[in-house]
Length: 437
Image (tube, rainbow, N blue to C red):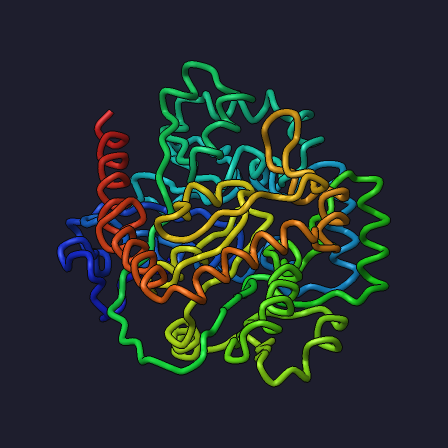
């Protein structure tokens, strides 16, 4: 087993809130994940609640889920077809009964999937659909199984990340027993010292995914979209998440504003589709960095930026919190739980979504990976782009407003609801209550 300890870097929160290594006095919690954890869990693993240590399985890079991190077209076909029949994530949860939790671990922390072993566990989730592979059809098919497992006494707590996620649970499996053990625990980020330097130009920043960095060819995307007509979902048609995170809108906004402001710059750290590179790649005021960068290089990108433009059509992981840490005001759209993180008029601006993009299923779950949604966001809505540009313009012209919003965002990750302290106090209390039942 791998035992996680925090780095030498001390967050602004409080040194007392950091846990280091595992020892005999710590509560060992099994960190149950399929393959290597998503990058958003770094803050939890490296800064756990005081007195708690997470133990990860040794074979992080083995197993079915891990194999899909090295993507090829055959695997994409298989995953899309399987996900249209029975979610691989749910199947892996059931087959996970063969594995055993380490004997020295008194509790299991599951990362967005059900646990079928006979042991006490808690589970976080982006929303209820995650338990069914984000497949609405599969959720309807397996809703009784999911509800029964969440009601089971072994499931001690259900920890949605947002009010939106809580509502998906309440509306679809909201029995009294389930709701009594459901508690919102926000994602959190370490606050780090920053040192900005003044510049003559204004820089907009957009960052894409580092978890799914490959770009599909148009032919591959067409084939996968054809499969999605049968399955109803489109897990990898926007595999790199460029469109899903609002990348096309970002370039459209910059194209509008750059006609008015000569000293406006755009930095994009993301894989971009070929048509975007062909259209904008030669623009000297646009810097496109497609390969993953080191933490130090990414740190410099945030420090050099003035505005974080992230009109994501999906729930982001840590991107908004990263911008807050670097005192950047954020401009986004009111999709999923974006407005829960970015406070309109206080830490940034939240613009209206497009009326032609389907964002929600009838059961209240986000529709971000459906075929219709993915097709709709391929072409930016002119009204949305115009609205985004208007709010970015306000920040370009008002440095004092940028500063005020940036400082409020920083406060939220230093001492507010997105701070390590806030998250750790909640998790520590949950773990203690679970173990003393």
